[in-house]
Image (cartoon, rainbow, N blue to C red; front, side):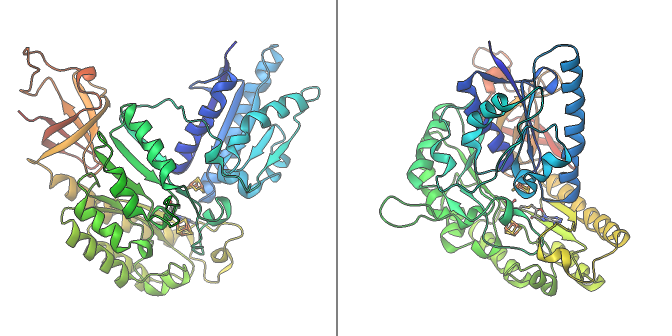
Amino acid sequence: MKKKLFIKTYGCQMNVYDSNRMADVMKPHGYETVESPDEADLVVLNTCHIREKAAEKVYSDVGRIRMIKEERCAAGGAEMTIAVAGCVAQAEGAEMMKRAPVIDLVLGPQTYHRLPELVRSAEAGRKNGKPAHLLDTEFPSESKFDFLPEESDLQGPAAFLAVQEGCDKFCTFCVVPYTRGAEYSRPVADLMKEARRLVSKGVRDITLLGQNVNAYHGDDGNGGTGSLGGLIRSLAEIDGLARIRYTTSHPTDMDDALISAHRDVAACMPYLHLPVQSGSDRILAAMNRKHTAESYLDVIRRLRDARPDLALSSDFIVGFPGEKDEDFEATMALVREVGYAQSFSFKYSARPGTPASVMPFQVPEDVKSERLAALQALLSEQQLAFNEACLGKTLEVLVERPGKRPGELVGRSPYLQAVHIDVTGSDYTLDEGTVPTYSDLMGQMVRVEIRDAGPGNLRGVIAA
Ligand code: SAH
Ligand code: SF4
Ligand code: F3S
């Protein structure tokens, strides 16, 4: 009998990757993933601790799942095991099970390879329906990557590949160095092997993941350490791998090897997420970002020299402790100077245990809201302008999935824009004169003439 596994993922792309790995590790133990917790034997909440709201959401979800579990128990149905994984698990540990005793087990991001054993122990240790309350938030000496199975179910032609994890930067607002631990880079040879395997299964677009991906310094197999620029060059040699992306980068780790990869490697996509957080040097220093507005702009100039069509995105925090109107204005000025294709902006959220949470001059909520609205208005304007600049152009689009409307396909442009392709409205046909369907074009690169541009996506037809 197959067992059913439901995983809910919160937070960043690394968590999306990790959730897939947890599904992989449970599969040989008879678990298949399902889309809802209703029938699940095992529920995993893969959590995010980055902002207060994200962390609190987990407890309301646990409450909902508890209801499902209790109703099912009352009806004489199967037991449900509830596991909390991810960054809230790492940060709060056993506290979670005190606050929500229905949770069976809590495990941190570095112990996913132990999930099958933990689940088995949780099931065996349950007494009269009372959870055993297991905790594994160690940072083990072994790397989980050496123990996770190779096989995984892939969805579509784009995939993530974790190359680096953890962070040694300690920005004063951020929990990631505490929840993910110290920087670790996977060996080049392992990554080449995993990338080849992905490509052999039809993947054409790989996004290299790391909390600090451009600090990558994995073992190069020759007694030295590799760099992200070097890794990208090696990956680009793999036949069939058309696109390479990476996220998230820190401005101070954008070295020449990486910048030149943007110039020399055709597969290295002209889109870069390079978070700046603030445009004020005073605030950047208080954030311990280790860069200034000017040094950030200098990196962007070097990148644009190497790759003139490079599109940029960033993260911003407004209302960091001590942020004054003139600091916020400096952020707005930097945004105007760079011109972003896409961005993510947040109100500062005080996180327990971080240095910024106890800094004086915390900014009032209404000031934060006002600044966020002004910043987001400017960023949305820039995003629309970037998309509108694509009108009339022909872009290479990698087809990823069918669209909602009949005859529509959805893919990604080199700049990571979602592109809706109207296949029936295109003059393009297959050799026999038939209109291509999703299965003809899935995973293919097609040239799309852009006819329509909105804030969140582009529309077009296949170029003849
Ligand atoms: N380098 C990381 C960044 C993780 S956090 C990565 O790999 O993605 C993503 C973004 O969340 C940060 O860039 C920052 O803008 C935002 N963020 C982090 N801590 C925050 C906090 N305490 N309050 C508000 N936003 C925060
Ligand atoms: Fe957090 Fe800063 Fe590390 Fe990014 S670089 S994960 S923001 S500490
Ligand atoms: Fe959140 Fe952890 Fe990612 S705190 S953003 S899930 S690294």
